[in-house]
Structure formats: C-alpha cells, structure tokens
Length: 153
Length: 153
Length: 153
Image (cartoon, rainbow over all chains, first blue to last red; front, side):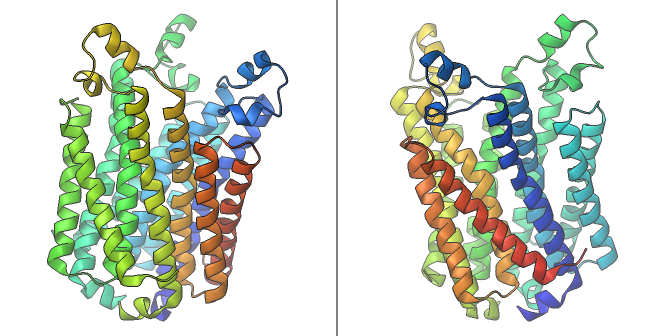
C-alpha cells in the first residue's frame, strides 16, 4: 500500500472524504437530539419508558416538522456525499493533478457544510439550492475526468 | 497507482461504476423537475417565493404521487447501486477474470437502466421486479466470489 | 494488485465489509416479504394483478406498521453501514495494526447484526440504541485514526 500513501492526492482525498462522511454521520445524533427535544419518535418501544398513558404515547409517535427537516437533510447527504466519495475515490486512482483535485475536494466539502447550515436553519432560498448545485457540479466534473481517462466499456 | 490503471478489470469497473452512479445522481434533478412541474415541495422556504397566499403555500407543501414515485426510485437506487459499487470494488481488487467481470458489470448497469425506466413510467409488473432481481443477483454473485477468494474472519 | 491481496488487514476488511453489505441488502427481500404478508404496497402497478376491486387496491396501497419498521431498519443501515465501508476502506489503506483493525471490524459487524434483530423484533430499549452507538463509535474511531495518519488539508 506504500505508494498509495505516498500520493498527495490520495492523502488529500482521504482527509476530505473522511471529514465529509463524519459530517453526514453527525445528522444521526442531531436527529436523535430533535426527537428528544420535540418528544417525537418513530417506534413504540422508544416511547414506552417516556410516556405513561396510551394517549401520551400516541402523541409522541406523531411526526414533527423539525425532526423531518433534519431527516431530509440527512437523506440529501446520502444522495450527494456517497456519490462524491465513490466517484472521488475512482477519480483519485486515475492520478489527477494535485491542485485541480484539491479544488474539487475543497469546493465539495465547503458546499456541503453550507448546505447543512442552510437546510437546518431554513435559510431563504436559493442558498440551499445553490450549495446543492456546487456539490453536484464537483462530482459530475470528477466523473467526467474519470470517464475520459479510463473509458473501457 | 500505475498497476491499478494497468488492469483492464479495474478500468472496466471504474467506467461502469461511474456511469451507474451518475444515473443514480440524475434522480435528484428529476425529482426537482417533478417538484416544479407539479408545484409540490417539502420545505416552507422553497414555496415562499412561489406562492403568495398562505392557502397556496399549504397546497404546495402537500406530497404528490409523481414526485413520490421518483423519490422511491431514487431510494431503490441507493439501496442497490451503492452495494454494487462497494462490493464491485472489492471484487475487482481480488483480480477476477475480465470476461466474467464484464458480464457482471454490464448485466448490472443494463438492469438498473431498465429498472429506472420501468419505475418512472410505471410499466406493468413484473418488469420492475425482474430488473431489480437481476441487479441483486449480480451483486450477490460478486460478493460470493469475493468471499470465496479472500475469506479471512 | 498483488500487495493489496497480500495484506491481512485488507483481506479481513473485504470479508467483514462484504458480509455487512450483504446483511444490508437482505433488508430488501425482507421488505418485499412483509409487503406480501401484510398486503401493503407502494405502487399502483404492484397491486393491479393482486386486487380486483378499486376499494381493494386502495386498501393495499396503505402503509403498514411492520413494513415501515423494516424500511426504517434498512434506512438506518444505509446511514451507518455505508459510512463504515467507506471510512473502513480508507482506514485499511493507512496500514493499521491487524489486531486493532480486526477488533473494529468484528465489533461493527456484531453490533449491526444485533441492531437488526432488536429493530425487527422491536426489543425493549436501550438494546437498539446501544447497538447503534457501538457501530457509530467504531466508525468514528477508524475515522480518527485515518485522519491522524494521513492528514492533508
């Protein structure tokens, strides 16, 4: 594995990919936080210890706007960050130029951090739409470069 | 990285994996298209600039059958295409026979293209079910071959 | 690719990652099983051949608690198992100690098997919460080790 570790592009990809996957994973405890803060859960076994009466339990099993917002943000991460890591890894293995690769990785991670802030805080559009587009553009650009380099159908 | 790029199986995997991940990503703009076409959105900040009255906004925040269909298709892609890419990469690194590997990659990509068409156009069953099964069978076959080659618990 | 295959950590990662991805994929046929068992489907074309009257079709398109439980479990797998495989691969390529790596891989796979059992059978909390936390802790620990080894911003 020595020469993978010797490649600066690989080191940079590993760093940015790990950071952005950790950001995606952070949505899970954030969802849990909002579930407890708004007393809104998805499973009967989650509310048995928290609610005493059947009416209270039923109320705790209703969906909540804030929880659903965080879950939509998490879902958008799954739809965008995972393709970035998969295509980014293949792109990295094609041996791209370090400065161009860094530009891609940095733009993606910044765009997704801004996307999360604009989603969770419900900032006015088009802030969320634009940050989503930057992330998509980065991944498509890496995919294009990868296909041009390795094309083998 | 030179010898990874020298491997035909790796070049073929990279090509097919990139194509099928791009196909999965295409579901995002398709969802956005259907959201605008049917005026059906998920977040309040998305409709503020489009609707003038509170009643109109409320109407635009209701779920729509066509949007939900595209989203279910996208979800099915996440559940099937990501396992294909993850297991396919490990399978590729075990050094499989090129012709057998190509058979797997081509069958998977074709099955998922057909799956998307049959889902979005709501073709009669079992067209969608069969295309889903072909994709599952390909990934399970690669997983089997990978486990047999590398098994180390 | 020879030296990747020569690495015991890589063989172990490939084995555990393949097993846990197969476990995640198993949720798809399980969902299909519960859909048929409870006669609860998501698409009109799925019920056309099963129901004769329009009322029967409408009834079959309502959501079912058991199906939704399996789908939530599947979603939790996507949110946790995919980050494990992505970060685990990068961690493996940093050349960690075999015994420490095995500890991570085994703890993760066991925690997710237990998570699925506790989710599908609706075991009393905190069984599901604890198994989820073990999985998160493993992935965060691998991410930390990876970042410390390769850090390149």
